[in-house]
Figure 1 (tube, rainbow, N blue to C red):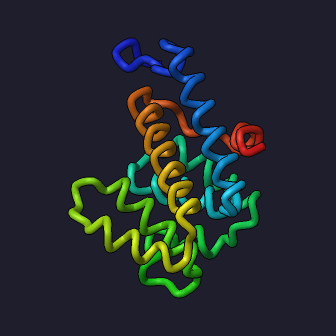
Figure 2: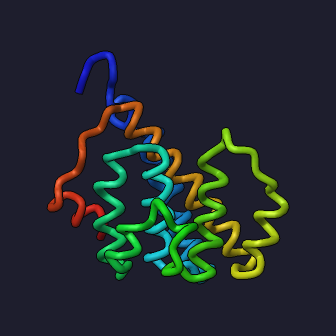
Length: 160
């Protein structure tokens, strides 16, 4: 840790604990809405790719594998729009997640919602939006703190 770049999760543990609680509630709500853990981890991975968060990638790529996401999907995730291996639900979720991450890219939110609604229920759309919101927050926590890349052993513990 650099004195000029404190681990903000350690500097204000009560705030971080609240964020972890919100992430846990988000995951439970998503699963209850019918979003499987593999899709949750695909969203976490894609958002972390966009944000360039090596810490979160080192956690969520192994978690995606553990959740049964095919390695090929992880290999081509950055180019999901051009690939035909993602199903309609995955594509809808990734579209929502990217629209909430790339805020400098103008999008028609009504158009995105209409497309997503063809493959996801309203409750599932809300769950995907919460997943994207939470991983964006954790990406920023790790980037602000300059957290290190997590090793395989630690990633496996965090994926449980």
